[in-house]
Structures are given as C-alpha cells and as structure tokens.
Amino acid sequence: MSTRLSPPQLRRALAKAPPAPAYYLHGGEGILKEEVQALILDTALEPSLRDFNLDILSGQQVDPEALAAVCSTLPMMAERRVVVVRDVETWKRKTKAKQAAVAYLQRPSPDTVLVLVQGGDGEADDDLAAHCVAVNCAALTGDALDDWLDARMVSAGITITPDAREHLLRATGGDLGLLAAEVAKLSGLTTSGPIDRETVSSLVGIRFGETPDDWRDAILRDDLATAIRLVPRLLETTGNSGVSLVSLLGTSFITLRWARATAEETKARGSTLAERVKKLCFDVRPRVGSYGPFAALIADVTPRWSQPRLQAAINATLAADIAIKTTTISDETGIMTDLVLTLATTASRKAA
Image (cartoon, rainbow, N blue to C red; front, top):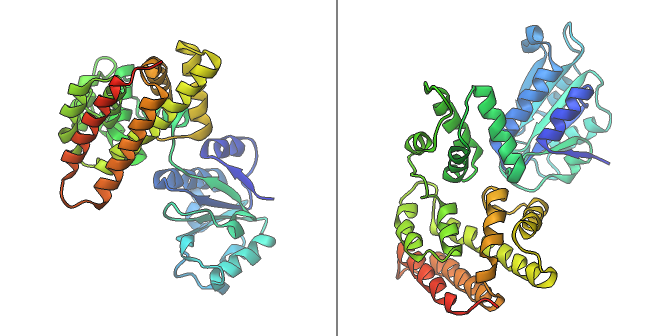
C-alpha cells in the first residue's frame, strides 16, 4: 500500500527519517511541487556533490531503457543520488516509459531517490502512486494556507498586522503564486514596524474591503449598496470573473444552509456555531477564504437567513451561473448586478 502525505507531513517525515526510494508529486499547485522537490533534493543530496548526483528528465522525451539505467546508476562519492522525471502526466497506461517506471518501482535501487512530478491538476495516477510516497500538492485552504503564508513571511523577515494579513489573503484569493510574488514585494520595503493594511492595499493594487470575499460578506450581511458597488470593480480586476464570484457565493450559501440546519437542530449560536462551521470547513475544504473569519461571519448572519430564503438564494445563484455561461444578451456586470438585487428581495422572507 502506498503512503500518501501532504507537503507539511512530508517535511516532518524527512526531518525524522531518510528519504524514501520514490516520490510521486501530484495536485494543482505548481509552487508546492517546486517546494517539495527542493525539500527532497536538499535532504537527499550533499550540496558540494549535487550536480554529480542529480538527473532531471522529461517524461515526454525519456527513453524507457535510459530511465532504468539512470535510476540504477551508482552515486558519485555520496550516499545517494536523485532522479527527477517531470511531465509524467503525459504517460498513458501502455506508454513504454511508464511501464519501465512501474517495473523499476517494484524493485527500486537503494541508492537512488526517484521523484515523479505530474503537471497540471489532473487525478493522481494510481499505478504510480501505488509504488511511491504520493505527495498531494493540492490548493491550500484554512490553517494550511495560513501556515504556508506565515512561513513565507518569516523567511522573508516580514512582520505584518493581522488586518493587513487578512487583506493579503483576500486580495490574492489564496493563490500561492500571487502570494509569493506579493511577499517578495513586501520584503523589499523599509519599515519601522509591522506593515499595515494601507501599505498592502497599495502594493497589491486592491483597496481594503474590495475583494471577492468582501463582496460575498456584504451579500450575506444584506449590505446591498456595498455589494452592488463592488460588482464592476471586481469584474475589472485581473483574476476575477462572474463564474468565480458565483462559485464563491454558491459555496458560501451551501455552508450557510448547513449552519442554519445545525442551529435549528442543536440550538447552537455564536461562538459554538462558529466552531462547528470551522470544523466543517476543515473536513470539506471549501474555497471560501480564511476559515476563522468566514465561520464567524456565518454564525453571525445565520439568524437572518431562513431555509426558504436560502433555497431561493441558491436557486438565484445557480440561475446566474447558467446565464453567465450561456447567454449572449447581457454582460457579466449586468447578470451579477441582477443577482445581487434578486438576493436582496429574498430578505423579505423572514428568518424563523
């Protein structure tokens, strides 16, 4: 049976034991794959002999016989060597290179660490995962995202205020590539104290309170004016679209419906309900922003959203999603503005 780990679990494992004979990296976050590769190389190779004991190959171009040969080559003046094979997503079931890799993995060399890297965000290959330590480099959410960002900032020597940190997460949508770029910018600043939210807003080009999460929050709080004002600004911002906004809102409504049902069944309120929502988020891993603030928001607004109102809101959000993907009559701004107005009318359905 294969071992399946997250990047933090792999880091802890490598701190306690030597590298495994083979690793298989998959998942959609390219920056995590790069970090995991660097971690394995730093752990497995002597820095001074690294160039002599590292081979990097392409799954598209590697010759099956050459793959077996390079994996069986003895290390030069070192305990082990590393072979990295990228683009293994190009291997089909009967690809000769894949068959050679699987055959090697059944009896790997004790002196070689083989690292197979799958590009893109496709499903993991069970044939490869079965013989490797499979490392899931999926998108980070919740505490995992917070920990990743905090580690980046510590490494860069950055101190940031809590509201500036939250705005950075909201403004980037938790995208690791964008976060890494913004942290690099912040590291170049000269400040006498923690970086504040105004500085972060200026640097990322998105003003505080004008992120997709802020738009979603305004809708859930029945702040119609703010929600409508933000629609065109968000759609003009690179990385945002009507589809992404509707997806965020729909996921939030489904979570809110769960919270409403839980509140009705268990009489949970306030911080108790927030903790249950946060636990649900950690179990399900929805893309709804930072779990702590989101859970607190859901607990706060649950009383105003009855089950009939929530069903109407979910139906309206689904209709907007379909309209964005199919209509040629109205643009995204019009569809999203109509959605906000429709959701506002559901407020007349009083929460029980």
